[in-house]
Length: 279
Ligand SMILES: O=C(O)CCC(=O)C(=O)O
Ligand SMILES: [Fe+2]
Image 1 (cartoon, protein in one colour):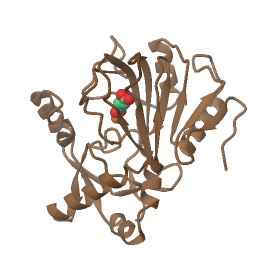
Image 2: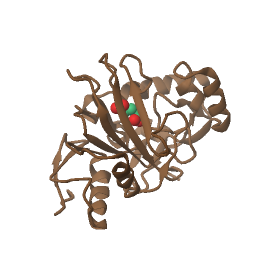
Image 3: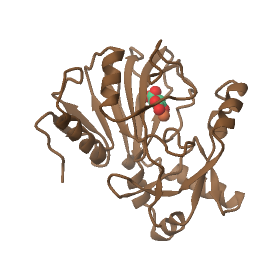
């Protein structure tokens, strides 16, 4: 059943994932029912795209607070006095986020949602972001592989994701505060109850109970499997575009195909400890 709202218009981006939200000004004051409708649309479409949303940092924070409690992130700078906003500034090439991932799965309770705003983007294109649906990725696996994955927990390790991208001292300090932990390989989405593949190519480091060789083989297969275009959507940014994604239900990939200072602002909304789909 497709969510309809009298507050805005929804246009699906693909049959699987993504929706453009039209006729909405996120800087205006809105009733709680509008945010309820947006959250429903987010559960259904997994990533929502908005254009022409010119706003101050204060308005951006207000938007974030309407989605939940905002978290502070370990490694990004923030605007003066606004620790809940991360400034993600890149110049293209290997940025570290040009790998399929779910944000902060090294945490006990990875974020429920992320909100990203384009502040400056390459003028001639490039720097698109892609998302994939981890429920579709799970459903496309054959039943014996699903059964295996339903029984195991994946290891998530901050050190694996950050090594080579950040100053080694920063990696060490953060890794000490965030030791490796496990999450079920297939989680139950807390809002939709659907099964989602919860292994990603930035933070995942094998499986509890499998040998290293078995884990590496299974992971390599899953990292390839999620790359099927049928699971994905790609968004071309304009300045003042916003994307809001359900972090648990998706993975994303920021393309590094530009040579320009690209500046994004992001907020992350706190989530719950993921539960196994089958328990
Ligand atoms: O810069 C982007 O498009 C996305 C970067 C990213 O991985 C994130 O914001 O979590
Ligand atoms: Fe990310």
